[in-house]
Image 1 (cartoon, rainbow, N blue to C red):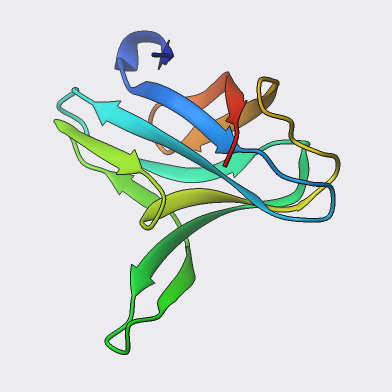
Image 2 (spheres, rainbow, N blue to C red; image 1 turned 120 degrees about the horizontal axis):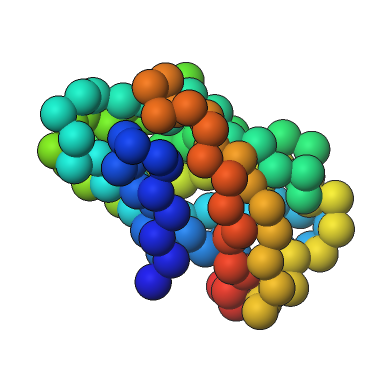
Length: 128
């Protein structure tokens, strides 16, 4: 379990991990965001130098039974809630990887929240 707390806000990112991937391909980051405070917050953006672009996405099943992915402008994090980013749901998409992401390695990521500000942490790479 990896806990990263952001100063006095106590907003916490738990168990951040990414799928292994190859250069030129895509990967995704999954985690749990915990906001035990009495103030709503919003994940505005995520940055990492391992990919050409880092986007907030939501996967969901259509009425026809196919999985689609839609880019999200942000991810709200209401006070007193935990939001899980997981396969098949909300996630952080790493688009056009600059190099291979190898299981067992890690890389640096910066999360920007509306109220908590920036949180920097290492994301562990796991086999898909």
